[in-house]
Amino acid sequence: MYYTEADISGKKRFKGGEAPSAKVYSYDDQEMIIGMIAVNVQLLVSLYSLDEQNCKDIINKFEMNFKDESKLNINVVVKNSFEDIKNFNLENKIVKIEILQDTKSSFSQKFGVLLKDDKYVNNMANGLFLIDKEGEIKYAEYFDSLDESQLDKLISIVKDVINFKPKGHVHENWMG
Image 1 (cartoon, rainbow, N blue to C red):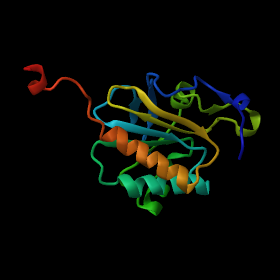
Image 2 (spheres, helix red, strand yellow):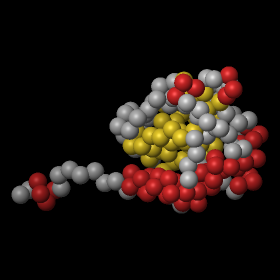
Image 3 (cartoon, rainbow, N blue to C red):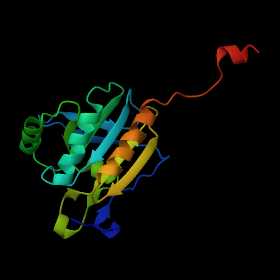
């Protein structure tokens, strides 16, 4: 699978920009809002299909590395059916990651991953969006596939954002 900029519709997002909110649906058809300001850091991943091996590898790598991380929400957004999502979760023992459906294309349009070319009708490009608690996009990437070294680099970036401590005045310095 390969697609070009011309195949993609929606507003492309970049590092440093503000994350929009988007409506998505859990496999039991519950509406959820993701993006924007949140209690935890968010890693939002759009994937072309749960059937692609690289997509499975990405989900399993994130699950393995962040399964015990309480300061991070990982949402994978796909166009697969609710039944496919439920089966994927069961087959792969996914616990940490929430796999969501972009039923009405809210996410894919707002994050610039909606594929508009006839050969990809109503599907999404692969994308990664790391959003801090303040709703700022700290990392954004659109990709065809990711290899092991790229995933390891991304995991390191996610850990840095999770563990970021804002700098400001400390009481001792302020008092002179």
